[in-house]
Picture (cartoon, one colour):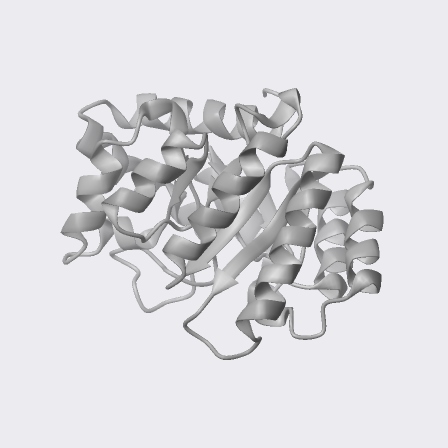
Length: 262
């Protein structure tokens, strides 16, 4: 299995990162993608990727860190994107929940990084919080500009939590949807309803660790070894075995991020 989104470079993992990786392996999670959130963490995630065989990196600037985004920032992301084991541009997107960066700055940074992703032929990892309509408008305008290598794998809307009509638009545009701990929450019936009708070849699993820990560990720090809880819930929604869902989501991640098969 592959955890397609875990902030394994965060401080909350500093004291026991090796143990976390060992637990992931024991749980059957043999690969992890770490997204960056600004240019400093780009180097951090690359250091981890270079130090561990099963870890890969995404480079980009999170919308909440775009207030001072400029040409130098974009050039730094571009430079990082050429390094080995970079499999995506991300985590990028829009976030209207927090007031950390003006909307116009977020949009400028998103569009610049989308252009870079198309140039580098790398899929994108999209953050969307309370910005669904705007982000789909931007992404739908970007899709026609993609090279042939990205048209069937433009990226993922990570930790999907938007309304069903946004899921439909994202899928129509070719995106994958990533599901995290909330798929296991007692009151997440609408999210489960959406997940149940996502085509099997477009589903990814992720922790978004250290956040969004699944039941029964909700309230504690999340980690890659909890990926089987999302796989199990998605399998039940699609009425297939857990083993089948594990295989499907692994193949999907390999296809989207151009990862070697194990």
